Amino acid sequence: MTNAQKINVKYGILEVYENFKSVNVPPRNVGVWLPQNYTPKKKYAVLYMHDGQMLFDSTVTFNKTEWGVDECLTKLMREGKIKTPL
Image (cartoon, rainbow, N blue to C red; front, side, top):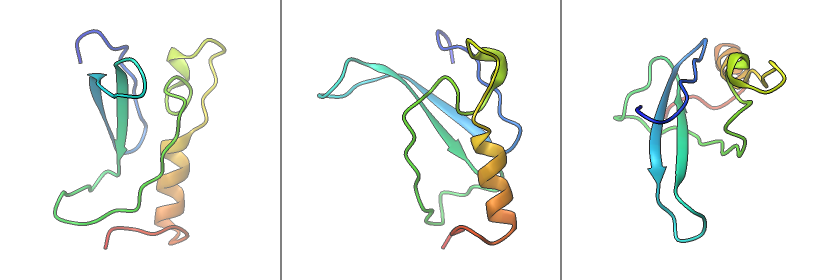
């Protein structure tokens, strides 16, 4: 990550793809959150969220709050309330 602002997550891993190109919008940074034990050998359910600033890290937001997406998804997976890898 060179130009993108560093976003920290409490759980899992956040991979950032800088200047991701699309035919629909100008290039932008796209973050992909992966569970802690992610492996590309398994299939995962996908959740798309369109707010790159407030999803994970309150230290990088304008009002110092976050949605806590990594904490919430990790909790729901641990409780068996959402689909885990196939």
